[in-house]
Image (spheres, rainbow, N blue to C red):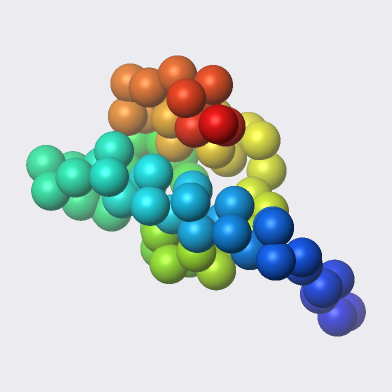
Length: 77
C-alpha cells in the first residue's frame, strides 16, 4: 500500500513537532525512557524526533505531552 503524499505544510508541522519533542525531552530523559513513560514504541518516538512522521495521531502526541508533564494545547500551536 502506497503512502499518501503529504503537503509541505504537513511536512513543516512534523518538523516543528520533532523540535518540540526534542526540546521538551532535553538531556534529562532518554528516548528509551520517554517511550516507556508514554507507552509508545521506541522506533515511533525516534521517527517522530527525526520529523519522519508528518501526521502522527492525536493520541500519540497527547501521550508524549502527558509523559513530559506538558499540556497538549502548547504542542498544537
